[in-house]
Image (cartoon, rainbow, N blue to C red):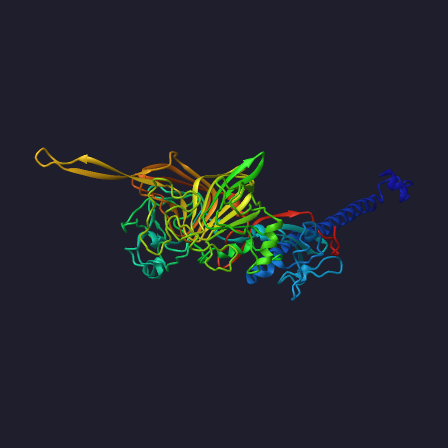
Length: 609
């Protein structure tokens, strides 16, 4: 205050004159400082709000990029081949040689300072994105990785996402029709092989209900109307039946009797709706993955075996191996009708085993021991009937017989082979059929596909449940092998006055073990997954499936005091990890399996960081 009086030359005054002016100046200065501070704070707040808005908008723009790519895949399944081979993310992940720019320009494929950006719709040209494609694993497991970058103002953010074909392995349980396979029931396929909501009779087609304490511990879907009684669905359950009102399932049992006791996931009271997922007619498309002449589409051909083929997985010194017996295989890969191309491949490379009957060869008593074709596929075909085919064996050398020995040990001695109600069903063990017989501990990633039946002849498990994965596909049924033998016993059934001898026939299990485990994604394209002789041989213990099951028709695993108790568990890895070259639906859709933010890939000017 004294300093202020001196500055204002008030020290010579004896009283307080002039102090009012001093106070005005003091408070005026305070107000100016406060206003200035307020303006500074307000201005910085506006800048922060703008920055926050841009920051959040950049992330939204990046997600818009992922959605744009997903939409393009939905409209054109061939879009998996497109990307910018010069993009940093693409080259870093070894995809530069597997992507190319599309004929119709996509601004989101721009890269670098001079590269283009796509504009987020309705953003007033303020929000932009671009994305980079990594498709180097697409031909192996159907997965594509995308790095999308969004930009608003000077804010830039990036996310990565894994985009994968959605299909049968998204469900623990999948069925096309909720009835027993007409080949097994003997019912008319013309009458019964239709959806309940599309004219199938309410009775007479061997409908199968969920009940008797069934617990479905994973996602479930049926294209048909599901009959549900005392069953528990612990996660999502959907159907392709969409009534105008009322229940989306039938609360009746297999005999059409009303029932209660249904339990659905928390927050739901019935199955949700999901569009029909169409199954292919056969798995023949998988055979294409064993060709040697399609280097672009099939850079790593799998193994082709012909006729009945036995595969036993094992682990030797930490390496995944398989023992393969396939006596009618002549060539393990093919190239259309080009015999020279096949022969050339066979003579220089034998990763699938060497055909022939010599020691260590595919046709020998002990088979051929070869490494598991990791990240690849095995296809077992019927013995071809065309003489020009490299795997042809004449019917004079190999007659078409049923259940009389198929060259790989089936049927067993004393086994009574099962018969089927329909004459159109292939016999259980055909000498020329493409049947695969599989068991053992797998180390690796593999799919086995069979043109006819596929049998699980023992436990099929993973050596490492965190990294190994197996797919099993068959055009016809996938069977849990359960051989039985028939025995006849004579006994006295008469009386003293009328002596008489009677006989009784029993079916006994030929396997000495109990319980069965199958770790795999399983699909029967045209028929069913079930237990062979489910109504014979007594109780067999528990059937554990850790993976996924898809089938055209419902399968049966037990009847009365015979067969197995079900214990099905979904392998949650199948949401993001597919068995290699697995079978996909007729209509392909793509879903995001994983997504997360990463460091920004570009600067605001478009240059790489």
